[in-house]
Amino acid sequence: MRGYPANLKILLITLILLSIFLPGCTRREESGKTTIHFVTWKPNVPGVWDEIISTFEREHPGIKIVREIGPHSSTAFHDMLTQKLKNRSRDVDVFLMDVIWPPEFASAGWALRLDELFPESERKKFLESTILANTYKGHIYGLPLFIDSGLLYYRKDLLYKYGYSPPETWPELVEIAEDIMKKEKAAGNIIYGYSGQFKQYEGLVCDMMEFILSNGGYILDQKTGKIGLTEEKTLEAIAFVRDKIIGRIAPRGVLTYQEPESLALFMQGKAIFHRNWPYAWKLSNDPEKSRIAKKVGIARLPHFPGGRSYSTLGGWQVGISAYTEKRDAAWTFASYLASERVQKLIAIKAGKAPTRKALYKDPEVITVNPQFESMIDVFLTSYPRPRSPLYPAISNVLQRFFSRVISSTDTPLERYALEARKEIERVLSLQLELEKSK
Image (cartoon, rainbow, N blue to C red; front, side, top):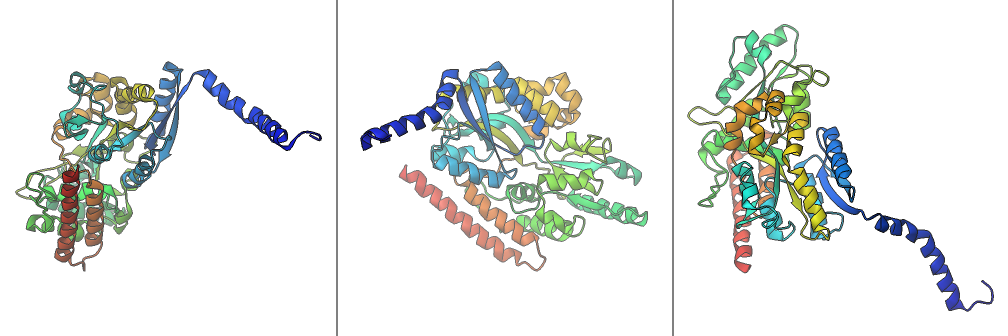
């Protein structure tokens, strides 16, 4: 470029670079496609989600879905997603929310209010508890995708072999498990009595809440705000898990188990009883993946003598980022995910319990998931975790507390329960201050 002024040289170089890099951008704009960034967790049955996305893109050629798959752990996924939303990231248009997140996301201004897009007439088609979970201060912020409730899976062949029926109480479960373990060991078969989720993460809170509630204890009274961690019935239930479950009928390895690891032990034929969500039915009865296919029974979770069975309300919702610049396309995709046909597909191919009432009368869904028909009352009466915009902070305290006290029989349970109660009281007082300041 000899002879050209310096400023003209810079201009020419800039134009050359633009000619190299811009055509791709221009072609994408000219294609007319809108890109929707969908942030989701690592699924148990990935093929189902591949089918869901490909079908949507085929039917909506003007919209391209870009998936970002986060961790399987609800806790780790929450950390990843909230960091993006705090930064108002453009890489989030549509996302999945755990059932306990809507109050937090709504209070923080991260989730788009869906009142106008999701009218009352449409909400009535969903299970009431799932709509309530997505409602905060009278407004709705998520579309229910599927519902979860804790269930007891058991080896029906082994219970039949030794003359047992499914246990109604937790002490009965321990007694049955110990007897079968002993007799199977004598026959050369090493098997554990129980498998569940006891790693320090959100699943631990779900499991422990079921033990506590079924003994007449409680974690947080939503009406009075009283914390029940130091109550006698609560402490009894926690001590039972520590002394009768961990390291006795369950391997100590369960202290590191989330859903996949605990289910794997059961599917390998190495556990008599197993606590999990509805999706485990399909996987444990799949002869290509499970050694115990067709040998699995399902029942309500046990309770303590004098108590009643409780199942933690779980499930996932579809949310839209309040910062999306593609609201119409985001809604098109989000409403598609929560549609009857997609929920039916997820129910049939992934074993997830739908949130739409009509699907519990769908012959195809019930044929593949016969347990849905008998367990519908469990789904309808599942118990929610404490509802609070600061629930992640409450959960963090609970996770640390439960993990600490069930890991060792030498743990001063009452002292740690008092410490955890005081921590949660501080969180709740902060919540009151935040609400007053708004």
